[in-house]
Length: 208
Image (cartoon, rainbow, N blue to C red; front, top):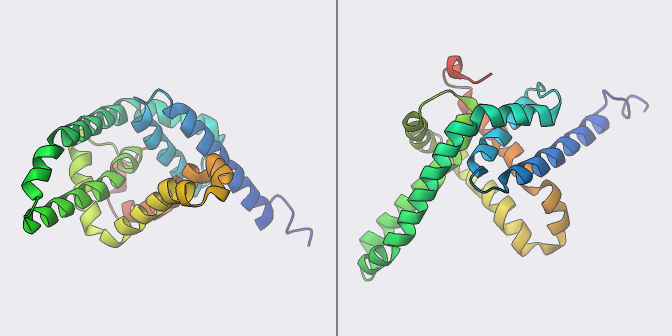
């Protein structure tokens, strides 16, 4: 019985992991506050989650700050590009909507294209956190991996939607718990799934 509650026991390890996710969630939200740093915060959170999975995170907040410094420039460039694409999407939406009215083929093609973009976007910042690559290379790899590993892409999508949207809106009783652990939990679970995908590829490009 004493071994269960020891520092090497499952209960202690579980509590420690909950604490780490809570801390990851908190520092992620804080680093997102300037808005322009959201991309860097996402990449850094995934980079820290990878270390947590390998049990090599050390002092978690120091590892997060190290990841933030490492990912700030490439992730911010990508985040600005995403904001520009979103802005262009809103600007062109009235024209696209008028084109889709009464045209089922155009409607379904647009929905497929949007779905593809969403699935691809789920890989962008996790890839930045895992590999050294150019911005265009990251985007191309995200496109390829999101389709090549479609089952994992769909799982990550539903975990993200469930953890970020459904729980806080449709399960208000869990809002307090979600505020402290929700996003951190989503990132940690997604990181586990995506790590299994990324490990199949050239580890020589892996970030330290």
